Length: 143
Figure (cartoon, rainbow, N blue to C red):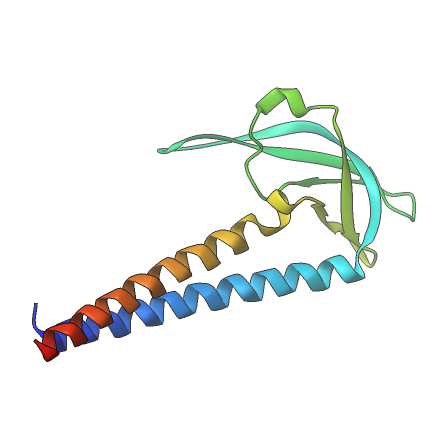
């Protein structure tokens, strides 16, 4: 691979890495803003919603809670719940928008930050590969 092609690849990987990291940071901050404004209560996992795709089967928790206004609310967790049916009936901490109680989340690192963490990790990996590729391209020009 020629040096110019390598530098172009480096720039592309760095751009991808920056986009992924930016999206991850954006989602992380959005979750933090939600957490600061959210009403807290407890809820119960009442069911698991099964979703299948070519990669396998996933179980998303369905949670029920009562809002401060007395409304019974159900929502679906955002991340697959490992361990399946053993979680049904389990009590969880719930965060919800007091003005729109249907906007609710299970308060756990896994449920709230897993997507952000993966985006930032993938972005960092792209950036690292870009850095190593750029160093290799520079090294080749000096030899």
